[in-house]
Length: 315
Length: 278
Picture 1 (cartoon, rainbow over the protein chains, first blue to last red):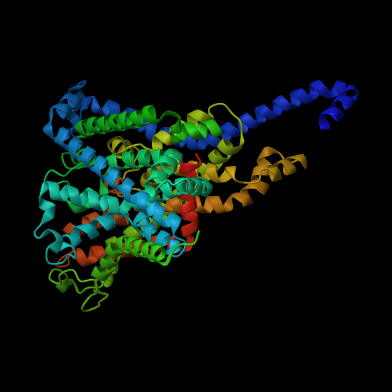
Picture 2 (picture 1 turned 30 degrees about the vertical axis):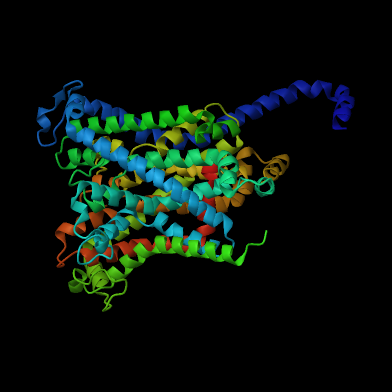
């Protein structure tokens, strides 16, 4: 209808058409300018506080720079990297970090999925469950970490009898307890992301499958999981990279002693205990590279399902 | 789909198990903070103090360090939140509403920073902040906090902004409002719930930080409570700092519990909207 009216009206307003076109591009230009202006502060802050320091870290990592002997600092090329990569401390910390990342994310995924199903399925008490699991999410990590440390301490802890002795001085037991603390703290986050994914699974489809005789497990694996894939990938990506930079829980539970330090703990110790800015920066850059590799693997494996590309596609 | 009685009680038990798993460790920490310091080491980890006392709380509030740290925590987290929310609101509005080249780049950059390992920035920031005399000051912590909360803010807010009825904006523009006026007078009020939710999430993020605070501060001039907890161990005058740390942990957990109790629906919506819808 409106098309018809427009064509009819056109001859009369024909003279004004070029002016309207100019106005439209003006509008587009205005919109573009406003877009840039609105984003500029955020972009400038993010560049100044992350991009510039990481470049500076690369520069520092190429220097011999011990804070105790600042006058002795000098450009030494890749020597700091060689020192770190030849050190067994680095490889051990990397191994511990990967171990914590893989095990805790795997367990969190299973528990988080169960928790998401519980919250999704129950009508009675859903609110109280959701409120309860937000407490571990919200609690300050280092405070919860001290709570766990005391819980395992003989004499005063409520969990002391589970292990009998001092579990935090044995490497493997201590790592297991670090993973436990990490799981307790972050499973709620995983569960909430997965629950949002569950909400996207239509009930009709599940009921139809049930009528067709699909078991609960079949419905879960053939309908729910594929439909939830984007939510699952986002949750796994975020949690993996978050687990890789684990620091607080280790600091509170063992402070990295008894070979339980992660790469973040190693970097921190080199900077603030050894006061070696050069080596510390080299470790910083190596951790950055590790995270980039993990993110790259996720994005290559899952392609368009990554959050950034999804947002870009929809925006 | 009527659930049978057995199913109902099954889910009920699952619910109770989840609640217990989530709250027991926290409750134990609370009970620890009310125990008499001298008894803590030998009381076998009971969930109910045999003798209740406020001694631990009185102790930490008498410590100048803790009160300073609490003031620092509140001030730094609030200022960081306000700035981050302001910057994120502008950027998220542009992302959700406007067409302009470079949008994809901005989103990619935010994603990159969301996944950035903070420890990688600690050594350069330590060095830069010492040079600029920002080390051990409030701005020295506010700057990294607001930066690292920007991606979260941009994601959550742009998801919220996409849900707003934009026809109202068109109507405002037809009435002669410029895009900037439409933003200020029509959209901003509609966006307030989303902005508020984002502010809570960002506040929790800043409140929680430990690594930046222990790395970029050296005295109580700017050290926040999480970092102060890490230092309690050595310099406390108590027999054991356990009760004091437990009390301090409870004090900094209380605001978060209050947020959670009052705004749980919004917090859940905020946490999930950014991730699932894009």
